[in-house]
Every structure is written in C-alpha cells, then in structure tokens.
Length: 423
Image (cartoon, rainbow, N blue to C red):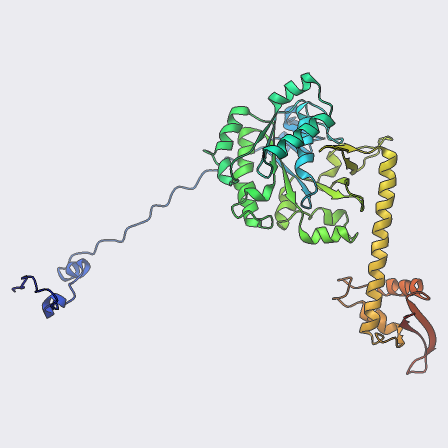
C-alpha cells in the first residue's frame, strides 16, 4: 500500500484514503486473534488495615488496680488525661476569656471557679479568633483580675502558652502537624481548644461528621498518645438557645445543648454551660451538665451544687464569682423569670386553642372544645397541654384575658363556655 505523503499546497483540503481512515484494531483484538490470553486488568493495591492496639483487663483487675494519681487533671476526675470535655455556650458570651482565665489559674495550681486542678498544670491554649491586640487586652485583664505576683507571672511564662496558627485546619494536629510537633516539644497536661468548630474540615459547628473526624480521628488519638486532656469550647445549638431564652431548659436538655447533634452529647466526657443570667449584661451562670457531680462544687454547708454565678470584671476583661448570698438572690430571680415565661407561654397556648375552637371573634365557645384544641401540636407549646393544665389556666385567666359563663349546650347539659376578653 502506498500513501502519498507529499505536502498539500497551501489552502488545499487534505483527504485521507479509506484505508487510513479505517479504525485500527486494538492490542486486545490482535491478541484474541492470535489465540493469546489478554493482559489482566491492573489490580489496585489495598493498603493493609491499621492494627489498633487493645487494652485487655479482667473485671477483678479493673477493680483492684489503682490508676495513677496523675491521670486526673481537673475536679474529681471530671477531666482526665486522654479524654476531652466541652465548654458550651452561645456565641459572643466570653467562652474564650473564661477559658483563658481558667487556664491561667490551673497553670498556677489554683482552683478556677471551684474546679480544682491536680497540681500546677502545663496549659496550651490554641485559638485563631483573637489578634495580638485582643490577646494583649484579654491577658492583661486576666492577670490583673487574678492578681498574679511577679513569681506567679514567671511560672505562667513556663506553664501557660497561647498558640495562634495563621489558619485553622485539623491537619495541624496530624502526626506531622505543626501543633503536634509543639505538643511533643512542650508536653502540656491540658490543651484548651477555641473554638471546636473552626477545626473541623468544613468549619461548621453542626457538622457531626466533621466533629467526629476532628475529635475521634485526630485529637483524641493525639491526647492518648501524648498523655494530655482536652477542653474545647463549643457553640450551643440554635434550638437550645431558644429553649433557654424561653425558660424551657432543664437538666436533660442541658445534656444535648452543643451544636452537632448527638456527637458532642455522647462523645464529650463532661460538659459545662456558660449562659447569660437574666437581662442585666455581664451576669452569667456556669452550669454543670454532663458529669456534673465530679466538678467538686459544694456550697458553704458542704452540699453539692451544680451552678456557679459569675460576672464580668469591672473595667477590664476578666471574670469573678459572686458571693453566695448574691448567687442565691440571682437564682431566685432566675427561677421566677423562668416561671413567668412558662406561665406566659401557657396563656398564649390557651388563647390560641380558643381561636382554634371557634372563639376567635369574641364569641363564646365550649370549654371542652378548647381543651381538645389545646392538645394539638402546632401551637405555642409544640407538645400541647393536658386537660388539667388547660382548666387551671382558664381559671387563672378568667376575668382578665378571658370571660367564662355556665350555660346549657346543644345536648341541654350545663357546660362552661369561654371567650377571649377584649376590653
């Protein structure tokens, strides 16, 4: 076969012969035609699974072998080496500054708001939110608030370090990460991480998968390998913020207050909540949630307590604990506000139920219909109200927000009728 490879003149169309345009056979087809076996497809090499060490002990060994005293870091084994706890609160409430003040006090071997350290701890605060000016103002205020002496400042120079990377990424805590190298070098007892969500792959506080990767796959293995404890500040879920604002929180809902669903509630060994205490700015309550009995908090009579009332320092960044009498007064005021909010919510639900039962235009409607409507979902109280609660609330509201009267219904039986009172 001859193929004319003489260059075509400029502007001419190059035409291929039918032979050149024909599809050439593949190597596999040639091999099949010759009766030879085809080349096997390339096999991907599967890396061997990482072997995970197991620690095995009998029940009697668990009972008889005392753990080392140094295993406990804070409280009555509230936080220990190789574990992590969370400080949870709404955004902008001072989680960074209170964490820094706690770290400074624990670095000196002092209790921070009643939480005692196991000796003078070496503390590393890892943060990215505050610039040099913020850190200067915060640490100057905290050192003034705790009234650190010259000797104590020297000790803090060794025991408390603030680490600020250029940007947050969980890779910093990988085996070859820069912060891991710093941990290996400084050997901290406690690492305070601010804020947890910034160290997830997506930077999302509600990303439970990202939280799992950052905590379970990165930080906890590092904490166990390097023998330190982790205290991470974390944002509160929006639902729980609203629940607390409406006075509807309780000890059970406190356990699930961290953003990220079940992961933080189940995975963190212990949790603390930092919450506004009333309407006055600068008043807060530090509340134990998970593992709260191990905080070691007691009142003057030795009774276990699970809340500490705090306030901002005056004229500087810092925190101080209020006296017991003030704390009792603030707790009473807080309980009263919660009760008032619950009462207002029940009244709102009853008025909604009257409208649902046909009494929205100032017309009387039968109380039994109101009770049935109040059981429905979708009102101000999502789960509805019980019969007794509705009857009791109607009695309380009668004469102010409602008018009631007794008269016969369609079955000629005496019944209570209700309408909304519009003065």
